[in-house]
Image (cartoon, rainbow, N blue to C red; front, side, top):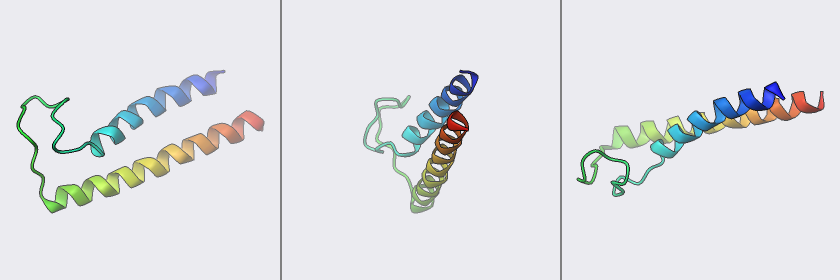
Length: 71
């Protein structure tokens, strides 16, 4: 039971960070300013790699949780 709570505590913030990384620059729902955000190519590449690494980390934690629940 404790592993599930730790998994949830880790997964929710990482998921929120990934949602922020994948956000649409035209969407200003969670932005302080209502101006569309204009990003240059370096920031877009950084977000793509960051999202990929975050996704790999989440998959790793899911696989570890499954492994420990059956082990």
